[in-house]
Amino acid sequence: MSIIVFIGPTLDKASALRELDATYLPPASQGDVFLATRANPWAIGIVDGYFKQVPAVWHKEILWALSCGIHVFGAASMGALRAAELASFGMRGVGKIFRDYESGVLEDDDEVCIVHSDANSGYRTLSDAMVNIRATLASAVAEKIIGADLSRALLDQAKSTFYQNRSYAKLLENARSDAAHLDQLNRLKRWLPEGAIDQKREDAIAMLITMREMQRTHPQPGQVEFHFQHTDAWEQVRRQIHLKSLNDSPGVASLQGDAALSELRLRGTEFLTAREHAFLHTVCQELAQTNGDGIDNSLIPHALNEFRLEHGLEAPGSVEPWLEEQGLDLAALARLLLEQLTTKRLRALLDAEMERVLIQQLRISGRFRALQDRAEHKQLTLSRRGLQNPDLHTAGLSEEMLWYWFFTDHLAMAAASDPDEYALRLGWSKDALRREVLREWLYQKHTATGS
Image: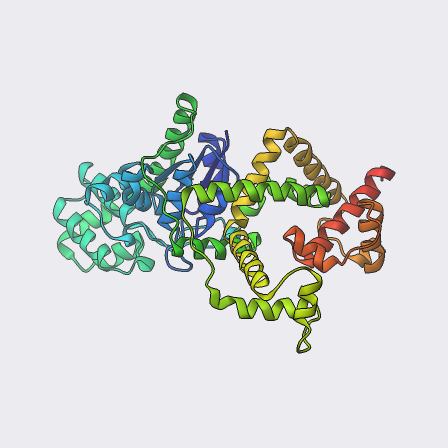
């Protein structure tokens, strides 16, 4: 039973792994939780997420995960905010920060906001969170380092400071003009390096421990009492998420399953057959949950123009004879075009879900492990030779030679296909197909020679 957790500046990966064996991804932004559901994990944990730079994790994608039977936990930062907002729907919040948001003690997002460096720098924190300052000053009062009056004054000062500029150093520097509390400020300064409380980190660790224990004692899928509503806004965002390259969502592309699908795609008609089964299955599932809406008839003229271009029927009066040969009339063509538009719309809406179903079909058929193992062995073989991202020049191939090998030798097709059209059928771009075919050619070459 896999677990996916989004962390960043609150907790480093090494510390997280000591508490819970899971896949750890960077801070979550809009769409990342939805993409994570494609791996069908037992649970998803949210600690860190983006607030300002990019769209934040959407409530609807968390509800989607919950409706799929995935347990969703939140703590410390963005996770605490979303858990407080969605606790009544089944999201599980953990820790003091979550409890304070849920009870109304805390209300503002800026309580958990901080500035931090990027992933390459380990998400190093560049400011201090207000919730940590509150916990630290409360501890300083309890240990009689400072008095309650000075604590309240420092809290007011910190709260009135823009979150990007909050830090203990600036807090002490700005307060030094208060001569009456100078001795207390000096004690606080000496005490802070050892006494400061990192409430966000403590809550994050508590969430991981909770997930670990629940996985051990209650491994069943989650159940919810609400009915997930497929709104137009949800479908629009879901389409945007699917169209976005997985490389734009750091870490999500590496989730187990995508590599296996790449291997299946290279098997040509086998993938297409499986994809059709997945499509039908997905449509049935989706239609069971939502009524859907039809295609507007006003789109038919545009579809008819595309049809004429596709079949070389641009000349006036050329459509009717062609239709007569096929046993059709204009009314029947309009109905067929309407059906095609509906199918295209369904495919666009369900494409991301279909890939999740494909992975599940691989698992239940018993073929997933073999494909995944081959993908991992391919990656290892190519990496050892510095061929993770090869090009045609490195391989000593021309484009024509590569496509001939793929369609004729690898897939044993009678005639070479159009790479652009074939890539489109697989759900890839031509560049993606070329890259994966080249990697496959090099893998077979080095595996066969043992070099």
